[in-house]
Length: 372
Image 1 (spheres, one colour):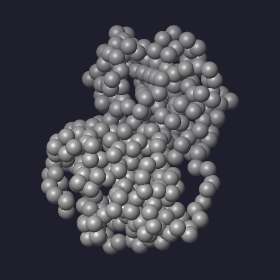
Image 2 (cartoon, helix red, strand yellow; image 1 turned 90 degrees about the vertical axis):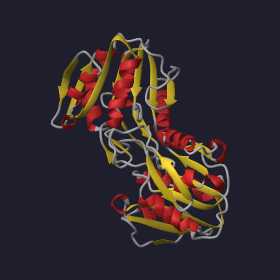
Image 3 (cartoon, helix red, strand yellow; image 1 turned 120 degrees about the vertical axis):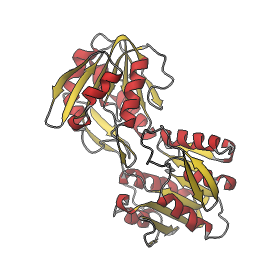
Image 4 (cartoon, helix red, strand yellow; image 1 turned 180 degrees about the vertical axis):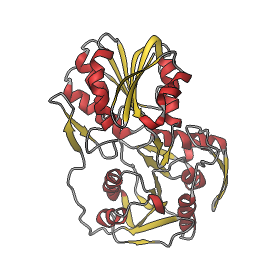
């Protein structure tokens, strides 16, 4: 828990999921900068917040009843937790999931620039019809994480923008809504083949490895048929576009498949890909915090290519959380098939939760491990 002395009042904020690193905070200078700039303007009209990482912006502005919109379910959970901690009514903030568009019309927009430029482009495209005349979009990021093309996208979809001076290593890009602007309309969905099949995978903006099949996934795919052939219940954990689960389904016609990810775009992509690859077959799709809420001792196999970062922060907190959740959800004798970079040392960390860990395959950078 850290104190956030915002221009709108003091808050206590925590990250979600919790982290073992006490130096990581639930806010940064870009959050401060956005709030300072907003406070310097006239009383905000209808207010939209996009990609609020841990709820710092929405909690500070709860009295203005903002709408909060983004692709990350974990960010929604962080906002909910920080509202509770600060005794703020959740009804003050309308939370809109990333697979929907904001419902209102907005005069002020605070946007945290996401890691994915394609996600940013998609969000700006969907935002534009929701802007009122004279609307201002203020995009903020730490300078080291601000992509050079972010300003170009604001100019392309919103209107002319100005870049602020740096402040505590953060920078803002403020764009004024130009109603005469005609933005691009080209599709933002990408496609590529699933190795060893004639299936084309589609990827919504912001999905992990949307331009080409991830190298780790490619190492893992040939092992899936043998490891899932007799399984009844299989989960693709952190499913992305669904490549691992779809491969399992192709080799096991009777299995029940669960696809879950914290990204709305990922689950939407996995659902579309599964439906296209296996028409008429059913599966379960969840935007979820890993396997939380899954019945304990109910899964035979979990397939996982875990993330090694949360937003811009690199670490194994998320992966360890997914390993622990898998241990709880698997039946006795159940198996977790996981791929990761060699240097992450998953072969050691998995032994905290599983009785047996075996290496099944390896490349120059990746290893595939079977934890039982």
